[in-house]
Length: 455
Image 1 (tube, one colour):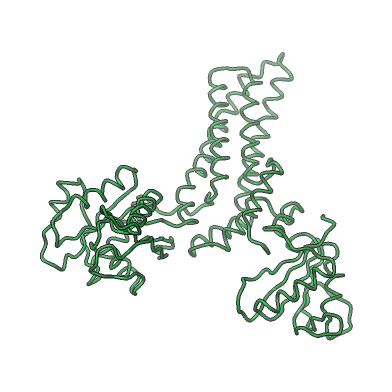
Image 2 (image 1 turned 90 degrees about the horizontal axis):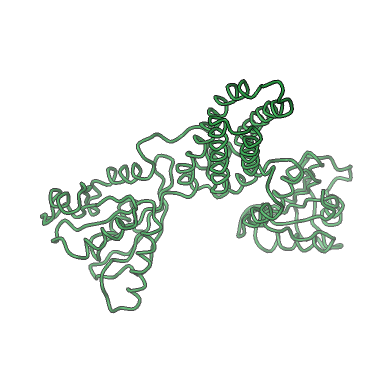
């Protein structure tokens, strides 16, 4: 455990009914006793809420509730004291200042969860899941993070490591007793188990594609030339005025971003500036941001105006997404007006079928949303097992997968067993990076630096 005691406001800033200030460390209860005075004079009991006054000397600053979690039965594994005071900046900051005055120090970002990890209360993947849960953009994303917080991912990784350890032990026997001529039997026994383990690691690694989308959302860029109805489409999807709509070209100068949940997956729609050549400095900046938004999107929706002839700007918008290899769909808008662009014309020129919509009448929107979802997620159903959502985890699994492939190839070609152990040990070490077992202190520090204060 640490020798110092940390404190932080653990609730969101702003006006609220309650703010919670959390302290963790050996002096948590001692410091709390100099700031918070319960109405009763009984001895503190862990996990009981006590009503009392927050005082600075004889001056009463607030009526609040206090609760003590005795080590090691706490979030961090240390003594924790929580003060539940009235919400708002003033009440929480006054209490924080008093705790600091009495010897606590302000917590660093993610320090509570870091202490929980270092004190063995959770593995690093569960700690990262805490951050994912708090920032979840959808119910599915929150459920996925909750599963990782329970240690489900860590348990699966630990099981994989345990099986690798068993196989390494068997190989070591063959190395230690070469006179027994066990190499052939060991290879025959271990190969199918290694192959199965590699399959499981590959399956877990491949869940990252969907897991990342559930965590970060599907970024959908609405692109096209001016006045094709991009802003109207955004408003039609959300059923309210989210973007300014005008007949004047170049109304949208910046990227407008809004979230929409479809089939438990968050979709981040980005309404962008119309793509065209312009002398307007601000509009040029908007077009540049459009290009950046399309480049970073999961799916691009290229909006055409069915009531206007195809133009060079339409082709430019289409090519912008196509040349970047981004999945795209053409939304043929304004189909409520006499058509000058048909489905056949789109298919002939661009080689794909458009989704016909009318943003004004809100027709075709469900079909467009389902098309976007299919392009991003693929034809398969959402994976229901433990999912990888973190690029760090995905990289570690990729390293483990490649190391096992090298080990399998070595066994199949009859390479010395000593070489095989190197590959298997590399795989074991890579798996340990997911749970934090083999992570360096520097990487651990960088992981928690990304957390918010009070977490």
